[in-house]
Length: 218
Image 1 (spheres, rainbow, N blue to C red):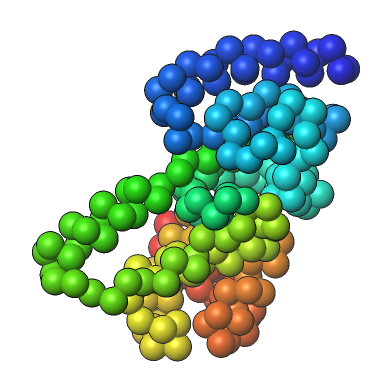
Image 2 (cartoon, rainbow, N blue to C red):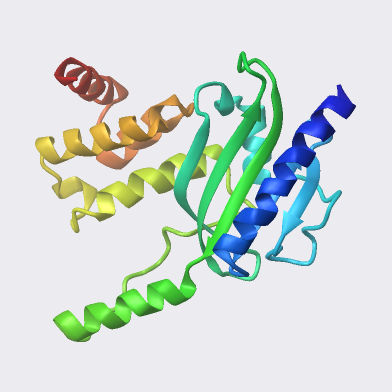
């Protein structure tokens, strides 16, 4: 099996060199060998410890442990922090067998977005005048990120779009948030419903009712 997996990952590596040329030096691309739980291939590492043979990072390990890959082929557009505190826009893709019963590899792409955030803030200041800078605490440390952290991060990101505290959201706004999270597959992550109930200051039963309502709408 090891040879089969390595051949598969080698084929992916060739494609990743192409992706790196497209995205540039501000993008870290990491391919993990799940069987060995280590880095198989890396381009533009964000820290010196990320080399071939390095131990798999905590988020990817958490995804393996909780088998989230069985229900989600990938996760995109989540936010995290590098070890050197660079703000990242990240995506993770699971390389599985055709029947989705076996996980062979994990591909994670981390794009440094610090400069993009600075440009966005500059444009906002030009349009609306100088505003108090938002706290960027929605970026979580990718060295310590867990699947639960990932779910909480996604929930907070959706709530943030409404510009009010979660306690001030209307029932319709909460329903829309649940719908968007459901479309992202967040509720397939174990514990996400519990976390959303805490943030909404309600019960898990209520969250399930929201999910049932949007299912009926579909």
